[in-house]
Amino acid sequence: MKKISLDKKGILEYQQNRKPYLMIDFATEIIPGLSSKGYKKLEFDEWFFKVHWPGDPNMPGMLQVEALVQMSSLIIFTLPKMSGKTLYLADSNNIKFFKKIVPGDKLKIISKLVSSSRGLYKFEAQGYVKKKIACKASFTLI
Image (cartoon, rainbow, N blue to C red; front, side, top):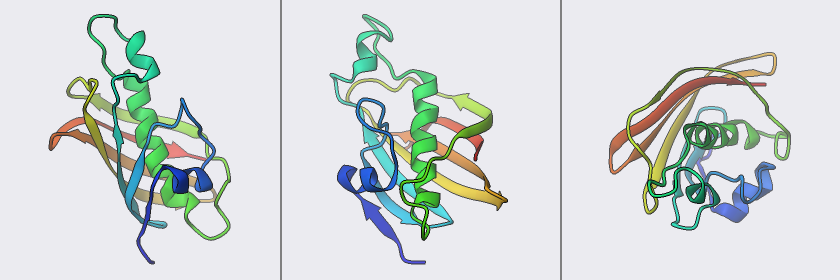
């Protein structure tokens, strides 16, 4: 399959999350049905930094997982006739957080499709900040 890259406008053509819940900014490489890479640039005025935590702002763990899920979903949404569909998180496991993600960080995401069967898609994804792993998870989308 041909590699695809998408800016935020392109991402919005494939999936339904919108600001402020869009947790990815750019997909640098998508191989439909196989893998995806991209990032989220954490701006200082992100809505969640104001509440998590005052005086010690950092990206909530579940939003880190959401960023991994959104990048992973592009692997499926870029397949023929899948653009604009909806995928739901069915399960997740092996979630690990290794470091805080703070304002100004760039969360680089790498995801791969592990298996698919009858509309169930299993993924493994990792998030990196400054080349060090910040988070990872395995999950199933349906």
